Length: 212
Image (tube, rainbow, N blue to C red; front, side):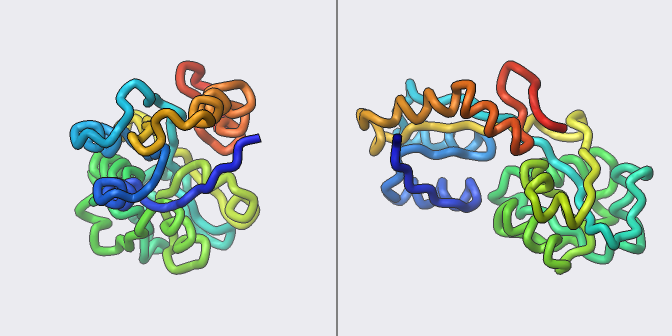
């Protein structure tokens, strides 16, 4: 078995930490932007990178909410939704696609005043799950987590309304040559790793396979 130490946070914040010398071996980003920037800074082992999953976003509300999903994305304009949580688009990829989707449906200007921003997609989900927001645009992977699945309901936001959420990993120079890196990546790309990612709401690259 391979012992791993995992740190969780927004992709943008990790990009900043890695740029300043944080001792990570692999960076699993929620999009391609930050790995590309790290590559430009010369901080990556260029030959060791790839897409590990494709994400989906959903509109999530609690079971008590009267928000009508039959209205699709227009549901966010409901008087039931006084506060809408999204991840911060400035440094969280899931926030950027949430903004893209709201703009696609012509809703950005009308909901801007009710937005509250999570530092990352996990904090955004915590906000709406705890009732700090009436609805939230979160990752499908979080919406199908046990608590959120039992205590709420969700509507899958159509893919055509936003950029693909290609989630990229990149091996950093500090991790290059470490013997377990390749084994770990083989696991991520293998059948067992794929089944885990699929179970948690991600599309597996090249298969279109997920639970949604």
